Amino acid sequence: MPGLVIVGTQWGDEGKGKITDLLAKDASAIVRFQGGNNAGHTIVRDGVEYKFHLIPSGILHEDKYCVIGNGVVVDPRVLLEEIDGLHKAGIAASNLRVSANAHLIMPYHVLLDTADELKLGKLSIGTTRRGIGPAYADKALRLGIRVQDLLDEKILRKKIMAALESKQQALRALSVRRRKLQKEGEVSDEHLPDDRLDLHSITEDYLSYGHRLEPYITDTAKLCWNELDAGRTVIFEGAQAALLDLDHGTYPFVTSSNPIAGAACVGAGVGPTDIDQVWGIVKAYTTRVGAGPFPTELHDEVGEYMSAKGHEFGTTTGRPRRCGWLDLVALKYAIRLNRTSALAMTKLDVLSGLPTLRVATSYRSPEGAELKDFPYHQSILHHATPEYVDLPGFSEDISECREQSELPSEALDYIRFVADFVGVPIALVGVGPGHDQNVWIDPP
Ligand code: IMP
Image (tube, rainbow, N blue to C red; front, side, top):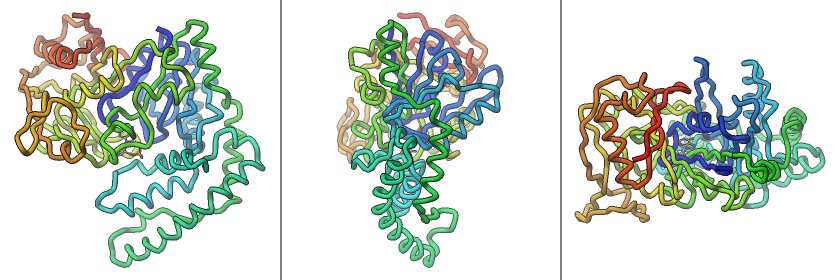
């Protein structure tokens, strides 16, 4: 299986990092193809917890290339912080490669992200405010600055100057608005970005990042071709997930890139026929950070139980994640979008102790119509209520289970029900955060 894509099938935070890390043992390269430091993954290895935002989960496998592909937007300051953190933990990170064609997140992107969210007020998306949307917008406007530009002072200065002009105008408008809102007592200082931008200091900072990043910068598409053409396995790792996809997710409450499997080709520079398998990662229940529709969301003690037991707080922003039952209508949609060949279900252990496990198998519109498919129309989705099938829960602690035969029959029935309903096998189940806390499920 030379080309394997791993994607999230819900609204992110499914635990893709852990599964990527596990499957990486048979791969020669792990490549991230979109997103930026809006993502966050935690890997627990030998009792040590590692948190990454930009660096792919594969970094702990020092014998494999760990690649930041051209489709990623890179905040070099954050990347260097992560590299420094790895060095402190005794990990050399000499296997890291960064695409010369990846776009950079600049200080003004971070400011604009906050400015745009403030401007939207009650309609805000709840972005991570890491500058992701504005960086992708500049890429599309052809005002973006790429990783390779860090290595040429003259070009870097020119490009920053060209990009800065329109940003300064936008941010001046923000200052005016900010002062107005502050006068009205609607925002406090901590919500307000410092909007001073200085060409010289930005250029100097980015040049120094460039010097430090130079050993890692390369043509990563070519690296992927070399590995694939030699018959070695390359894992393409998505950040975020299908329902946050810019084209196919719950727009506008989405991220600004395409986290679905098809985007691996664009974001890494390979062809569709390089992809042999697509693994979808699904949490045993559902979570969402930020605003936007979430039909199976729970506002009761069951939601609180999931939140507390699953430690459902964003790795990047620390925001509490909204929690709810597993939504099979949405999952079926994500599976078809990604043409998922297998699923890994994570955090099944969190559901232990709940007497009943509910799964949404259809939605009901306010007019009473049954909706079996994920509605493309936002207003329909916003008003849809889930119809549930109730399955018996389990009370046993399953975190020590390593074999299918050790799982309680109700847990196995839950896994089988989901797999049958969506028509894709669940090959692996996560029963805890540890690297070894997994159960392989026999094919039916
Ligand atoms: P942005 O990607 O920062 O622009 O945020 C857009 C939306 O995507 C917001 O609702 C974020 O909470 C959400 N989002 C972005 N990255 C992640 C992630 O890694 N996990 C979960 N939600 C995310």
